Image 1 (tube, helix red, strand yellow):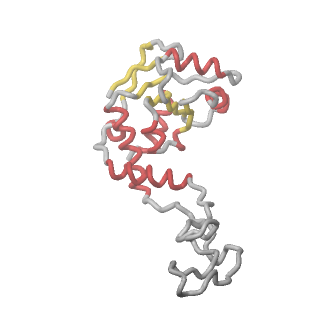
Image 2: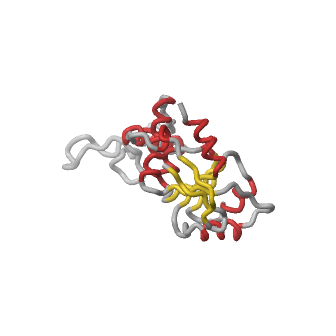
Length: 209
């Protein structure tokens, strides 16, 4: 697949790039995408939730009423989950939600996500650029020039560009990342994937056979 390279003014340049078929034209594997996305979201969970069971709750253990003869159900403790302020049955406790996935499966999931973006023509190639100082206005002008305003955009740099990252962090729906941090969830979440010329080279190094 051949794509035109744009400059930061949104103008087409005389340059084109050819996307590697082994990366951007694989047959997407939806189950691999599901597992990788599930792992990514699970890893974001703190797992610090906790609840009180009967042994954790403070309160009297005295039997509330006699066992028989009242006409009502038996009740043995004020800490019973049936009463207001009582314990919780099978409540959550701190736990680790993360789980393991094989490297090959994670790679397949990311290739599948990139392939979907290529099939949908949601990839834009941009000339390499940077800013002298962090300016949100400058970055917003780049997004507007590419007609990506109001759309979730993921811009990929070959390595961390702190000036651009600081320029983009206040814009809702826009994220700047580097090739080594690419993940399936962020790729699919974005409406458009903006790749810098040099980042395509890094993607081929990282994901190529």
